[in-house]
Structures are given as C-alpha cells and as structure tokens.
Image 1 (cartoon, rainbow, N blue to C red):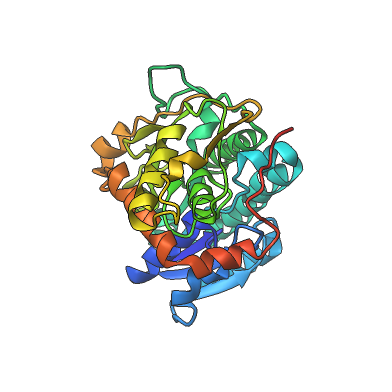
Image 2 (cartoon, rainbow, N blue to C red):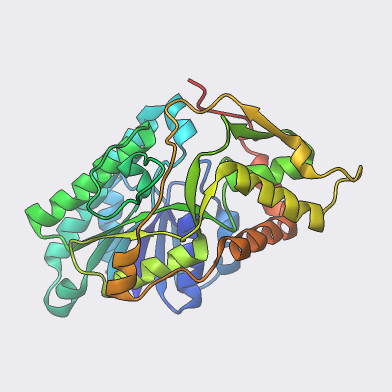
Length: 349
C-alpha cells in the first residue's frame, strides 16, 4: 500500500513507518519535527526509495493537499499529536493547536482528496486516527474501558485528543469520509522520547539519579509493546469496519511502582551499579501529578473477536527488549538529550 503517515518521526509513528517499509509499503512521512520528532529514528530507511520524508505540519492544509494530490495514497494514518500529559499541564495551547486545529485541517484536506477518487480507490480509501485510552478518564479498582465508555478526559492532553476524536467521527457522519479510530493503552519500546515513564527511568537509573515516582506509585496502567500496537493498526487498516472504534491493549495492567522496580531489576542484572547497590535505592516518591488519573484498563475483545488481533508480547518480554534496546542505543538517547529536554520534571502546575 501507499500510505501518508503523519507524525512518522515520533515514537509510535516512527516504529510504524519502520515496520511498514520492511513490509513493502510506500510511505510519505509528514512530521513537524518538534522536540519529540527525531530523524535519527528513521536512519535505517534514510535512502529507501519507498520512504519520502516531508518536514511540515498537519495544520498546513495547502501542503497536505499538495502531498495527497502528488502521491495519491491509499490511506492516511494520523499519529501527529502533542502527547505528554505533564507538558499539557504547563502549556495546553500547543495541544489544542496541534491535536484539534491541526487535525481539523488534516481532515479537511483528506476529505477533499477523497472526493476526487473514483471506483475502487474511493471505496477502499481509509483515514485511520490514532488516539488514546486517556479520553475515557479514570477507572476505579475494577472494570475496563470499552469502545462505548463515555468520554471523560481529565487533562488538557486527553481533552484535546477527545476533541480530535469527535471531529473524526463528525467527518464520517457528515461527509461520509471512511474513518477508523483506535484507542491504545500506554505504549513502550524502542525510540521512545525520554520524558515518558519507562525511558525516563532507564535514563535516570543509568545516570545514578533519583527515580521520581508520582505519589504512592500505585497508579495502574495497561502496557502495550509498540510492535504489538503497530501490528494492531495494520490489522484495523486492513479489516476494520468503516466508522468503528477499536481499543488496543496489552493485557498487562501494572502499578507504576512495579514498572519502575522491574526496570531496576533488569538493569541490576545487565549493568550493575559500581557500588553493588540495587537501583531500587534510587526510587524517590515525589508530589503527585495534578489531576492524575488513578487507573486505566483496556478491554480489547472487540479487536480480538472481530479482527483476530491480540498482543504477542507479555510485559516481561517487552520490558526486557526495551531495556536491552536502550542499553544498545545510548548514542540515540544522548543525541535526544542534547536538545532542550534534560530529564527535568514538568507539569507541577
């Protein structure tokens, strides 16, 4: 297939692009290269004739329209987003601009392009919007998010993603645009910008720095290895029902403190501290994030039962592969940290 991928130099988008090129797809990769976009992630396909990289913004409707007209993709996958809750607490405007205004501009350009298609090209075209389980808000001790769970976003980030989801739905029901939406749980794996929990803990642990755990650390997340997520997206793109939403989860609910301890144990085995102390001694509890959601849990049975997808990586397998990747790719991490981000805490309000 020929795909226009937005945000394809970011974490999930970059992993998807690498996988898609390896599978023989043609990719037009549009990325604004904000702090979280990294061309180093795409180094292996820098000269691949099936990969065209374009530095630009999804909010530039003229640019998107020109790319669609020139390349005539079979589908558009929208990964482009501001995505870190802490950053959204400090500066929500950027999240509205990219996730809401930018998505609207993208949808308008894609709608106009889709209207020019005929026959099988029009019938088979898809717009896949990649969203988050955070739009559903927070759960108590029991229960899981389903595709019919009411939206209740609690952070500026999740509110902006909820708004973009509603726009995607509206463009389907108003204009007939053939859309698909996915809501994923917390992703982890290679090429993850180190402001997020797992790569942050790895980087700080290796540096001998305190490992910040928000509040009591008992916030629960479902963890999804990014390779599994990419396969789920390919499955939804190929066989998902137009207009439908699919939840994507890893069947791996974990308390944040347990995730941190698992990383410490893996690093103790692979890269012991010089003083022989376990890295768990670096764990430091800090003031909780304002408005921190207590628990997320995904029911991905619709995706499993209708389309046959289920995760292949257990958390134990995925976190070991992730730690090994960061240990083997320290130059990538150091180049990221040479920018404006230095592992500092954000979002304290």
